[in-house]
Image 1 (cartoon, rainbow, N blue to C red):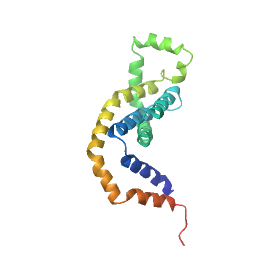
Image 2: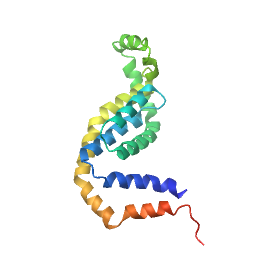
Image 3: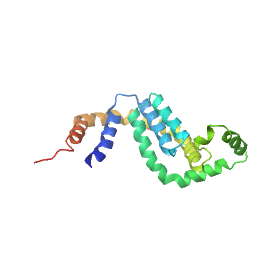
Image 4: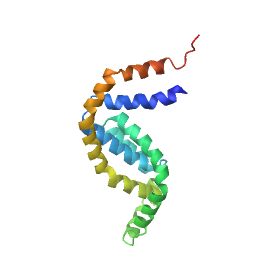
Length: 170
């Protein structure tokens, strides 16, 4: 039970204290956001996961933000459905969509689904602002936060708590 609480906290501490550039961390968060917003179980999500795993980013940041935005995506599905509906019903999109849907692999992408398409478009629109804001925030606050984490030995305390979680006290 305690491990379910401590694991995300340890991941967050690892992300913040990693010796990575702010750009890699920001890129990881931005790609994780796009991955998290897109519904899973289709080729689009698999391709996005492949991009996240093949680009040099802070992987814990990417996976943590993907988990966070997967949770957020369930709350904004009505908005992404409306956005996808508005975009997919444009007259100039329909011939392109019909042509692409006749290709052998394209139906597996599920881009004809309004929620998948709307989520992907929302993620792509929010990609650069997320990258910029996270990069600026990391550059400004990360040294201060890392110094605090080291001073109070937060990472050590979380590791000890996780290691002793299954043991009984007599």
